[in-house]
Image (tube, rainbow, N blue to C red):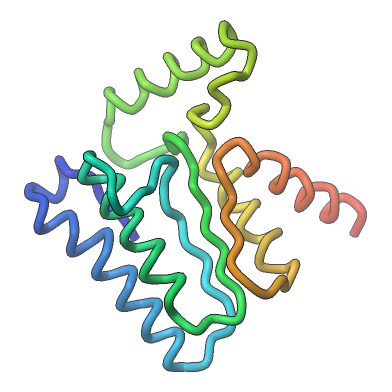
Length: 157
């Protein structure tokens, strides 16, 4: 569950959607004996960030880690690419620019390389099926290889 600052209209509304709703769902899952929690966060998530967006994501990650799930998987994609119902020209431009910069830096900025939403979804499926205890954090540049493992297993099935 997530929004943008523009759609939320205020920091308070953004916090309600991006922190409170997600944390409340996680608490309900925990109370109902769900063993795993999978969270889509963001690259740069840091509770001490000077950027409000990253701060909220970091606070949510910390709060989720304090719950008693047997297994927690936190996915930290960079800019999410994919079809949307609304036009987000700024994100589209950032996606194109990110791909160009990545080519010229030889992958040095892979951490910030835009990632397709379906790749994140495939990575989540793979991580959930691994049934690994503990807390696992997947940075953006790792999501593609994790998703490819799901593809490989599906082809072999």
